[in-house]
Image (cartoon, rainbow, N blue to C red; front, side, top):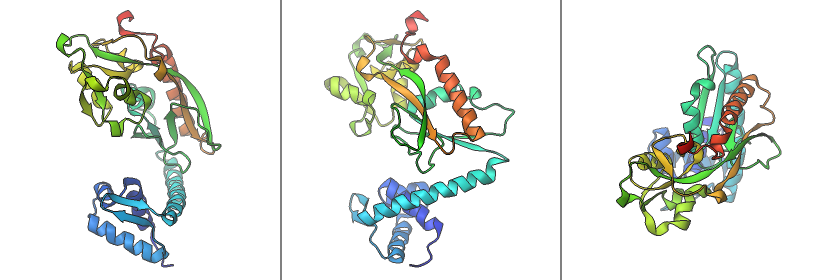
Length: 290
């Protein structure tokens, strides 16, 4: 096998994660033609087919899937080395969480990171679950207790959901529903409008963050976590809590890393922040009673 540089393996990861050349081009700045040539060279170097190519994108072959797992381990090792190099000067903590917990942490950022300390925070925001197994993130916030044996978990509390509309909404719009597009509706609360109000949906977006803005603007009704909807006095609940959507929230970290000072510090601060608003997260503080 030819001597293949780490930059080629990194490019392979991006093609695999983004499903093709165009997606990888968008995050690397390289042209699809250049990336395609590099992937052909990689396949020639390892002597095995790594992708099934089609008009809709690139899909990993069984051999490609094996390499993908191995390169993820290399990526995790590279990141740990990078963290070790920077630890003494400016430690980095990477947090993976969903749209609304990221919104909440941003609103209370000074409780996570003080002006006096030399701590860097990187937030990966997505509805899809991020993997901690290969150190893609240091801390993850999940809606269920992790089953992976290499992860440590701490229970944060309950999260409740309800439907919300603007208090100032035109009465003619009060029966209209807002939703994330079906292909992006990964979480249970995002699927709820499609499963229960499909005929009343008048606006769809591709990112959950836009739902709150649309509700405030009076565009219609959307399902939101209670710690988002009840926190804003401009919004009011439509009906009672949607109890079927209630879940427990967990903060998770890799067992090997959880004793690192900077990770332990950020975990403790997130835990304290969320638990201090336990009633709001659990739906026990509707805006009308605050």
